[in-house]
Image 1: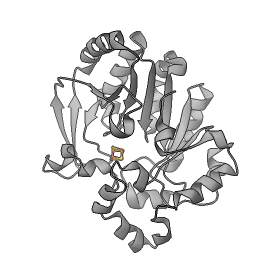
Image 2: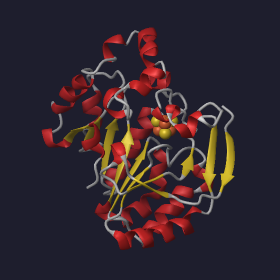
Image 3: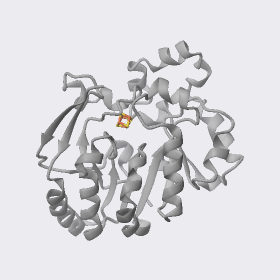
Image 4: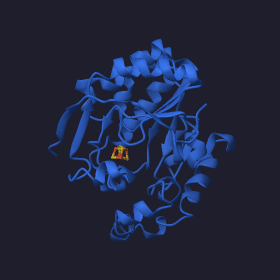
Length: 273
Ligand code: SF4
């Protein structure tokens, strides 16, 4: 798909953590828009997308020269109190254009000099491996949360065809773990998966966060409803998986393999520290 890329000069980078991210002092989005364009993405129903007038997933604004701005903001915010950052809430910091632009990498470079108290890197891209050198420097003050919504790549392709394959994400988790970077898997949103899923995760991660459309779309499932995801489930024969209880199937499967305190639900799973 052709993506419309635009260079922008941001005025601010660190935004106050609110709502689902209330546990964080700030959120940080290196890009506006997201070329992964997942069909279920709740950002589709947020003002940033609604007022753009273009299909979500077809445009990305590149926040140029962000490093100097972040440095200024970090110095200011660190004087006020603990700085805990969620990167990112409405884009993927390691989408395709990051290979070339290295905006996210430049922000991590700043953070190694002015470390936040905690940084959660939320992505579904194996490109995060490129920045292992910087992530290592942040030590226990960072956690990489890799989205793996299902172990079934055919299911993933129905909902998120432009995002990286499941196996590439699992390989990335393994590599990060080998390098000693704190990691978790985010099964979020829960998509239909198989009984083999826990055993695939066991060797590559020791913390599991599970979230679904009803707890995690910021509107008790209403945004997801508006996106027509229920109809997609019905069309694909997955109706049994579209309800408020379905995530519990995944929780109980994970608990057969992971200790109880290593399986976390929704907001708790994304919390800092
Ligand atoms: S990767 Fe995240 S931000 Fe990007 S489209 Fe998918 S859900 Fe939305």
